[in-house]
Image 1 (cartoon, rainbow, N blue to C red):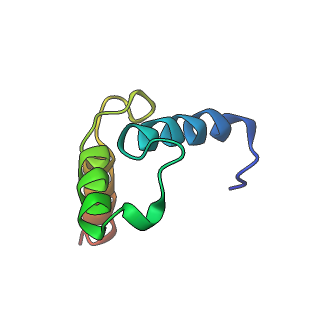
Image 2: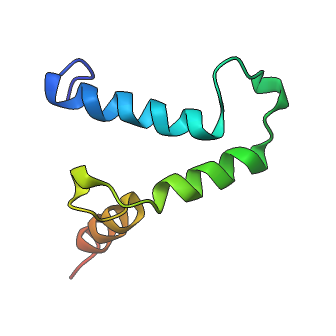
Length: 71
């Protein structure tokens, strides 16, 4: 997988836009606490995504994890 793949760019740019909802441009990262990052990550990982067929990243990850350990 390459970061410069055309099919991947839009998703990456969208993720950046989502992050900016929590951390606006120009904000000093010295003012951002670990708790703020954890809260943003939890909210983003539990937001349904069209590119994941309206599942959340957490759901997709958990399904993949369960499949990896299925007997």
